[in-house]
Amino acid sequence: MATAEEQQDPRIARISSAIRVIPDFPKPGIMFQDITTLLLDTKAFKDTIDLFVERYRDKNISVVAGVEARGFIFGPPIALAIGAKFVPMRKPNKLPGKVISEEYSLEYGTDIMEMHVGAVEAGERALVIDDLIATGGTLCAAVKLLERVGVHVVECACVIELLGLKGRERLGDRPLFVLVNST
View 1 (spheres, rainbow, N blue to C red):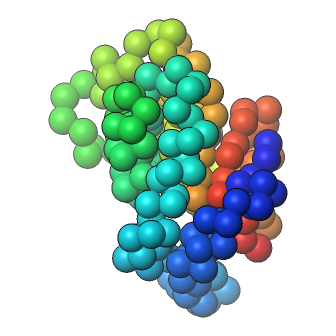
View 2: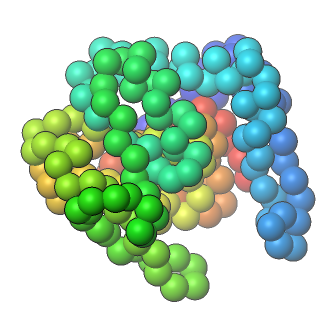
View 3: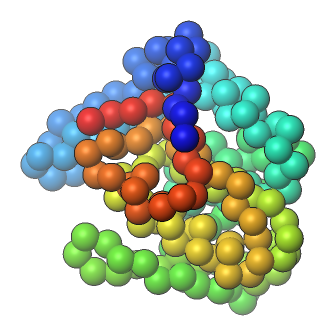
């Protein structure tokens, strides 16, 4: 699937330059993509939301599912702008009430993603949003959780894609849209 960079939208350069890269965080060898600086730049943050809204406005999406935690930053304004509900996809034991869960593999072990029972209905059309795709594990878990209850996932979307970790491949044939590629 195309990235916004390939479309040469001038807003992409502003977004990309607003993302700070922190070397060796949280451990040596990691180049951490810090979106907090993007959030401080009101123009770049607005451009980020606007690009997603422009893409999804006419796709009949009824659910924006945000992956904990940074998907909670981008998801709600997109959901409001396109007239969809926002559904938080959370780590275990963070949601009150009944939940359904999806276990997924990490580099060293497993984790679980949860969603409230009844938050979505079979036949709804969803966008899954997060700040970044690395290995693709959390996005895949979110997609599987939604698909298990009969939701059609229209696309996954991230601000940043870490190309070297091949998360896009893990998604298989599921569409992925990203604004900024990073190595």
